[in-house]
Length: 104
Figure 1 (spheres, rainbow, N blue to C red):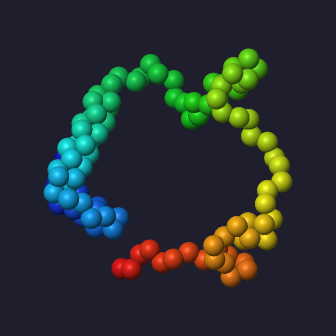
Figure 2 (cartoon, one colour; figure 1 turned 45 degrees about the horizontal axis):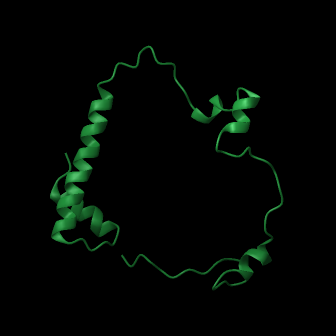
C-alpha cells in the first residue's frame, strides 16, 4: 500500500507541487493500480507460454505484418549533427544545451 508520505516524497522528487485534493487522488489511484497488480499476481499462468515480444506474433505471417499498425524497421539515413543542432534553441556546436532542472 502507498501511504500519503510516499505520495509526498515522490512529488518532492519529481519537483511537483500537489494540492491536498491531488494528493488524495494520487493516493487513491496508486493504491488502485497496486491492487490490480495484486489481482494479476493471483492468476494461474502455468499453462501460458512465455513471451518476450508481443509484436513477434505480427511478423510470423506476411498478411499480419502488412495489417498491423506498427511499421517494419528499416535502416535509413538520419540527420547529421549540424542539421540536428541547427534546430536546437541552444547548443555549443557539439551538444544540445538545456536548462538545469534539478537543483538538489
